[in-house]
Length: 290
Image (tube, rainbow, N blue to C red):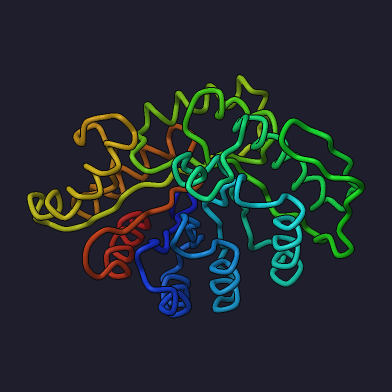
């Protein structure tokens, strides 16, 4: 038995047309979640989620994440409600700040990223509950907007955030928090403390992304992971050796997952690196089952 939900990311660099087949393969393996990505210039997250949901029967699909500056809260709620009506109980909606440079490049940089994220999450959650929303915020304005077809079962809306003030915000307004790749158990514990400082309830979910590469040759695994670890380390502002990964032998990888679960991760989403990602994923699931 696994002690945590296991998800897998459909990497942004993989071709969109291969998503349905991948989704069916990982569902057959017994994985709990499939997470899709919305990064500027890659795939649209809502469209990718629709493809994955339509290709599968039970898989929960997470959107990690839609950048708040790119999305009108009204339109985003409409899109999410449509998916949640057609695929009840199978959607998780992640919203975040977006990469500041990318947001600036398309002319949507927020004056106050914190205010925009808080107002967006509050508005989207209220709309998904079927409420009539009047909001005149610092960044968001909605004048009497209400969904005609709100979902019977509103999907959880979670915040994909990294920095302390944003983690506190997540605890205050979101149903859960999505933590980016590279964060290990100590980071997750620190994030949980900030989320609870913000006022999170016991029901607040914690989802952790992690690079994953599995193999018996430790040097080869490290070589395969190196570009991902170095690039992400630069983004996080930490040396590559401090970027946490779920890697090594299948047993080692399973132990890393358990370490994240032990500090409160309810879902661990593996971002597979290297050849044969489905085979690698299967070996981790097998080790966790043992």
